[in-house]
Length: 156
Image (tube, rainbow, N blue to C red):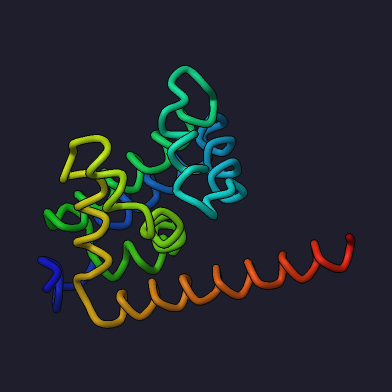
């Protein structure tokens, strides 16, 4: 259960979520988030290419987006920001996690880092409602993938 469960959000919690929001608006972070949202992660090979592409903007943007949400998850898990207030403001963490989730095992094995995205994963598994949100987003990815295949087939 989240450390802030049953507690009211404070002005300090509000200040923290505002700062997190402001950080998402920084110019390079906007580029990174835009790239991540549109990145093709339809296969392990596609993900691996970005992860192994040291020195490329895509590799930097992927690391920037994933580490941002991993750090934000840590704040919630440690009780530094109110759980419910955080999720009132931040649905993007669910999208970000669901997009990389199918490859977490392979990333952890390849990188040798069992801790890769563990805080985000722990946070998003911390309540039944959050697990359900992740499952819903995963379902949306499947629907979008099917729609894109149909569109591509119709254009051929």
